[in-house]
Amino acid sequence: MAHKILVLNGPNLNLLGTREPEVYGTDTLDDIVGDLRKLAEGQGIELRDYQSNSEGALIDALHEARGWAAGVVFNPGAFTHTSVALRDAISATELPVVETHLSNVHAREEFRHHSYISAVCVGVVAGFGRESYRLAFDALISHLQ
Ligand code: CA2
Image (cartoon, rainbow, N blue to C red; front, side, top):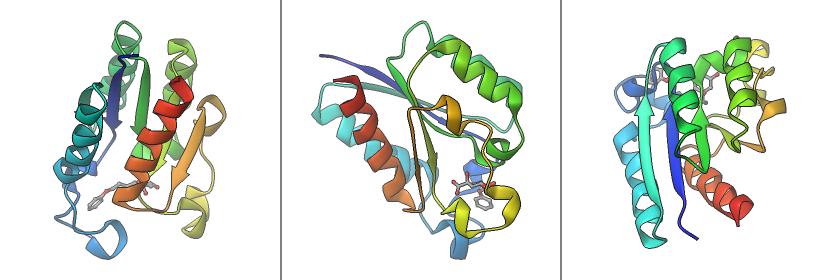
């Protein structure tokens, strides 16, 4: 079955590979999305990706995804810990969303331990760096099959 998947990334993730390599590694967002593109191509899956530093633009992308995507791999960045609006947008789309984090948010500062979106996602992957995205993508495809 052919699927269309959105890979959505939130604030500051455009800086990956250029700052704080000790926390977020040296891979760029293009490297990470490139991994998923290869995986998707091998399975006949169409992948679209979008990154924004703006909460409203991420909400708009989720709303639009409702019209074309089968599911979403989503790293909401710091909005994970602040945004009721993103949670409501995920609920409204009724799409399966996999919450994805490079770092193990539970091993970091306490304010990162709570996620507003986990409860409306089909699952959460955190702590495996670049690999988190691959795991999330595979899990989403399994969920859809
Ligand atoms: O671990 C993750 O993927 C996070 O979603 C990353 C967010 C953070 O606020 C979440 O708690 C966990 C931060 C992304 C910032 O990315 C940067 C990349 C390079 C340099 C600075 C920030």
